[in-house]
Image 1 (cartoon, rainbow, N blue to C red):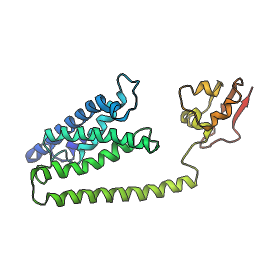
Image 2 (image 1 turned 180 degrees about the vertical axis):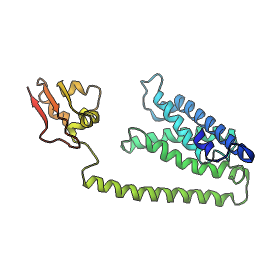
Image 3 (image 1 turned 90 degrees about the vertical axis):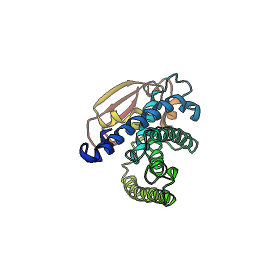
Image 4 (image 1 turned 135 degrees about the vertical axis):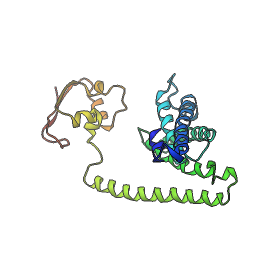
Length: 246
């Protein structure tokens, strides 16, 4: 609320209305999006059908509404903010479904929320802006819509190119992923050693879809493993990390 309202740089004098409108819209859009996502996400995506109350959908729906309204928070009416929030909710749910179909793993659903809803927010302002919006019949509104699409392409190109360079460098330096063992037991153990565990790997990782590493243990179900990770920092699996079969 204060992030968007504070962007006006004034809450008194002539500009208080702009800040006030931004704050109101930043409340109503995520509220509408959160409740709508909470009620509809599992029906749109087919996910989490066994969840009676999907609070993950509620929280990400709130974020989807916040992202959707940010671009136009000071330029649209509150009713339009509600519509923008609900549309953002639908776009978020559809994006979750699309990424699942494409088998793209995004555990935090960051792209669905910030990427897809962000693009929708940039487009929404060209439709609902009281001064220049297409739905208000403003002159050159069609040109405004085109400019917003161009802005999306520029932002995607800029961030995509820089991110690709960064991640390619990290991939070459083996900074992208943990080892399969560390993926299995969790990043906390890798980064915050020393920790000593006793028991089977499969029982420790109960409820988790195991990596390829776990298939190696299935052939030896009766063996127990003692995993001891030393406190050496900034190291992957090395001589200090031992897996021993008892």
